[in-house]
Length: 488
Image (cartoon, rainbow, N blue to C red; front, side):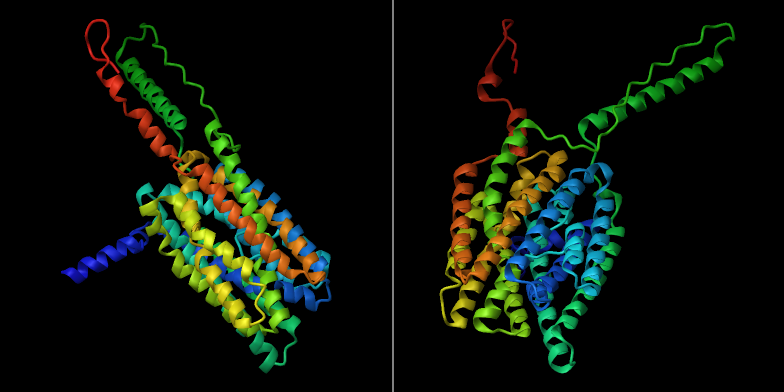
């Protein structure tokens, strides 16, 4: 009995029961995340190495990554702002097609400008992080499909599967390339192109998963739309009753007038964001911009290049290293939801993320590869623990009808800020000052953590605010009117 109680409690703490009992659409969205991050893990490991083998300088590679992220800003902004109006499933399908197309172009072409165009219009992740419209649409849909009581559990598993997919992608890519170049007599460029063909196939598989989603993933009508539908149904019912009465009345009796149909406001594809949510959104965007700029300075593609240059690690060992970091991040991220339940989302975000900023700043200084690897793994152990609480927090501080647009704007701001980093790191790498990128990134991420704590500690969700507005205060409850009757 005690054993079964222990495992039941463990299942609840880790969110196993929440994801197991979730809807089919929730599981499909989490699976899409796994497939997408697996694909990103394969290409991120080799992107800088591929461009370098094609003869491009560090500065030009940094420019390539920056322009790729800037292109993603435009694509993501357009697709996420209109996702609810055009259909979330359609946006996910379109993103999958762009992802597959960009993989094919990278595999068949070595021209710098052709690949740059494909990476801007399509979906190629230079940092290993989320790009494109996928995340905003998926998170908004998951928030809609999931009760607020278990939302952090679902987001924790959503992040876990993404980290696990990225880990397997890096591992598969690293050892595939090493196997092809060492035993298959392939050139490194041909092996890298083989990986991009695989990336295109994964994009097609993700398209199939998008086709399997149900209509429950589309946005729910707001209260105004429900009222309009109710009014329309009432008018139609009254019209039918009037026609029935006509049939039993004499031919000379006056014809009853059918109530006029109320004008139905057509739903706009342009999202509406309330004033309170806009204020919160501006604060979050400022903080996330600092954090994302720091992430851009230490994009995974550049970090792999750093370990390859300084310690001469081959692709297979690089794949194993970054697979291990992602697995550690996945395992540690699983307990983030449990921590958030006890201390709150904001404290969980800050207290788990702040140590990773310190470890990040220390990575470039050891001359021993094992110590540098240890700092990298320590950084990964807490770097992703803020994701699930952050997603749950962001879902809670805005209205349900605003989530897709708000999350889209947040992701666009993050990507825009992140886009500056790779070019700066490319310039630093070209001038033998690679270490500066790690130090500055660590300091900026620590500033983000402290800013988040200062601005949003004790901040109440929109659901809690609405609940407080509906519950009368004690003074209002005991107030009486002039006739001695209670009133609120």
